Structure formats: structure tokens, C-alpha cells
Length: 333
Image (cartoon, rainbow, N blue to C red; front, side, top):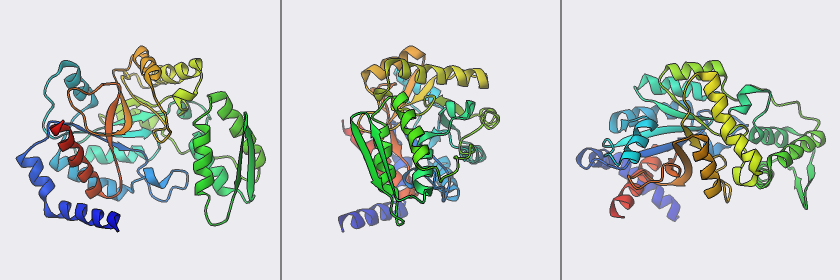
């Protein structure tokens, strides 16, 4: 009941035009970084919680273009580093993972005179490597077998696969993989493929290509790094985490001929997806910014390697409510 009432209040706030009035009468000096992933509909390889349909995305971009001031991540970081005032009502749109549908998102952004930062899982473009998160969805979602049992070091993962839903087993296995190093993750994937051998290999068309990325750069989009294989960095070994962070930057720069200076920590839903050690690696690799999945807006006191973002949803009124909520929290702090 409370959730329903809260939703109606937020929707009424949006329809009343108060948010637009606030932006005009009392412009914000706290930039907003929006966190998108996939701009798609009905894609069973991507969690519904991180997708926005293309038509809805365009409506959101249209609104942002009218009521916010789009800036580059480079501009935001320059202000943070030099303690220079931000442009009023500044906004940065970011996209994690590097899904192929992000190309259409970039075209929509360009149409409305906006730009975005696309954080790329580079190993999934360079090689035949399948995005492991999607492969878990594919194998557990498509198999006709009714159970799976995996031994992971001293633990056992067992799941019964009902016909009604596979959401919970997929969630549990995804969370388990986030707790292990890269080598162990790969052994889990190999064993899972063996047990679920009734499912064909995942097609290699989920992620962007170098050609598409080059076109996006030409559109004025910023390209950032999101590791080589989307591993959970604190769970990886020292050598694995360094390779994931550094080689992603090196590869993107070589293939696209640009300077990659921005990073996004993968796996924000896990209990620990970055820490002081990982921040140091990101700094040592040459990045000047890193975004998290922590909620909030940016201020001149923000740590450039620990930037907060606002999560996206298909409901624009929810996004705008969260933006204003954190704006006033930061102003009052």
C-alpha cells in the first residue's frame, strides 16, 4: 500500500510540472549522472531491471534535452579536479556493458543534441568470448533439463529448474560467480555447458562491434572502460584484476584511436564490487574518473574515482523524483 501511494505521489509531482519549475527557478549545481545498460525490449539475455525500451528511452532523452544541460564526463571531471563551478542543471548519461543496442541509443542521443559515456566490456568485442552474464541467462533459461549441480571449491550450487520461472536460479548462480576469481568462473562456465548440453551455443551478436563503436565516436560519444570480461574485481586475483582494468583501456585505445580516461566498476549488485585496492589499480592504469552504482549526485567534494549515479527505470517520474531527492540532500549537507 505504501509503495503504491508513494508511486502515485511521485507521478503527481511529475505531472504537476513542479520539477520543471524547480529546475528553472532554482537550477541545480549538482550534476546528475544517469546509469543505463540495455536500451531494448523483450531481450531474454538481459535482466529486465536494467532495460529500457527504445521508445521510452527516446522520450526520456527528449525530456532531458529540454530541461537539463548535457555535458561531457571530461567537463564534469575538469570541474571536480579544479573546483570550478559546474554548469547549471548538468547531466551526463552513461551506459554500462556495451550492448549492441547502445548504437541505437547513441543515434537517439545525437538526434536530440546530447551525448553519452559508453563503458565497454572490451574482451567480448575483441574475441569470441561470450558475455558471461548473458550466457548464464541463455543456458539456464533455455535448457529442458530440470536441475543443475555444480561444485565450486568447497561449495555446492544446486538448482531445480521449473517450467514457470528460472529467475531465482539465474540470480543465485550470477551472485555465486561474482564471489570467485576469473579462472574459477571459467571452470564453472565450462561445467555448466557440459551439464546443459541440450542448449546451443550463445550467438555472438549481443555486444557492440568495433565498427559500431567507431561510428559512435564519430557521433561525439565518449567511450569508457568496463573491464575485459566483466569480472567482479575484488574477487579476482591481483594479476587478473590488473589485467582486466589495464588491458581494457589499452585495447579500446588501440582499436578506436582515442584516449580512454573513464571507467565503470562492474557488478554493482554484488556485496563488494570495488574497494580501496581496486580504486588504486584504476588510478594506476591512468583513468581520471570511475563511476559506481551508489545512488547520489555529484558535488565539488566528490571523489572522481567513486562517482555516484542515478539508476534508470522506464518511469521517467521515478528518475526525476530520485534526482530531486538527492539534489536537496546534497544541498542540505
